[in-house]
Image 1 (cartoon, rainbow, N blue to C red):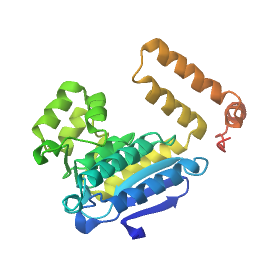
Image 2: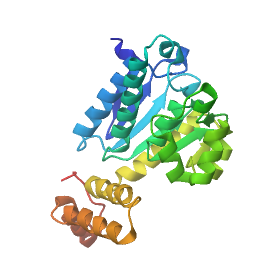
Image 3: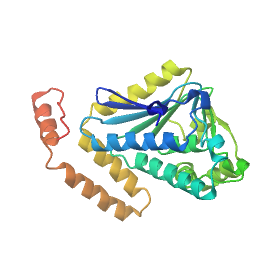
Length: 261
């Protein structure tokens, strides 16, 4: 297996996953999905040291989606295998306790768009184009696109984008609420992503994880159930050392030193 189809690095408490098939516009073949899944699991298991994850890509595309060259060679059973794999990998990404940021440096179509959707935050370069284009290929989004996009921007707008296979600009994506910010170039794109990551890192990691969990778990339930979930997440934080450290730091008029404990 070519270990370079996806790279993983650390920058302090920031994990960086990089798609590395630039000649194939970072299209997702089965090998790449396996490597991506392995790294996501590594991040999950190391939540004390890796507190924010950035997903990025080499070349001029973020991800062009499924590898259609590979797809043409697959049996129907293998196609089902691949669809299950991409859905499971993206779900694992979405369920990470750590906040996740997608750096969309170019094309993000189909599965590439769905990869970004599975992240908590998205930044894009101004020239990026993106969309769920599957119906133009005789299929539908199969890695969560129909569900995550409708929850993010509403069912009507999601239908408009999905049923037309429309490709939209970064500016349009920002107006719809899909991306959090647009950068003029890749240097500024990285600065935006790293800036957000460092803002998050300034806070207590266990509190960040529980706040994310409360939002994610509460977004699809009624208000009272959501409030109950929030209480449960708060209860997890009460016995932590970081909570006591924050109180001591406030009393001593200094910045707290959070250990993730």
